Image (cartoon, rainbow, N blue to C red; front, side, top):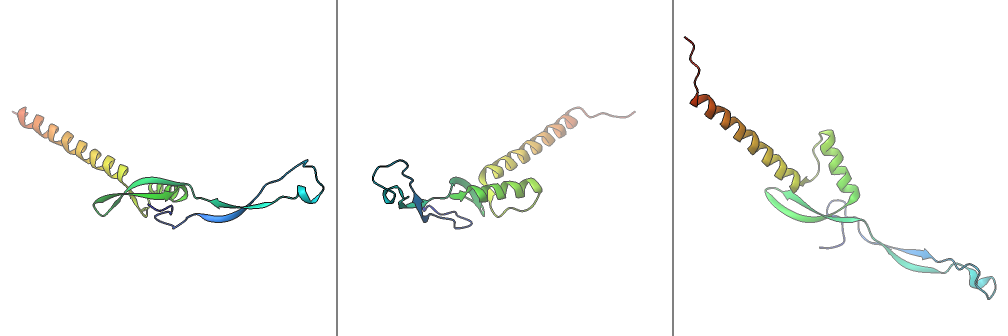
Length: 115
């Protein structure tokens, strides 16, 4: 996997970093802040998502993860579906179905007749 966000494409950016030398002997010019190259990396997390009916592990930046969680919380359709959410949704549906079956079985075993 590359170090790039699956959704927004955010990746490593090269920049410059200043190191400050305070109190170094040798005059004013030696105390200046030299600039060195630095790679600024995004905060990428491995996440399992559902693409169609297939589970896939991808890297998403934390900003995109927050966006998905907020969309789910607000009732909007997120741009990706987390696999963990899909599993819990399926488990809840199975529990509800099994509870309905238990109620139906009890009703068929003990039919109440009105006389």
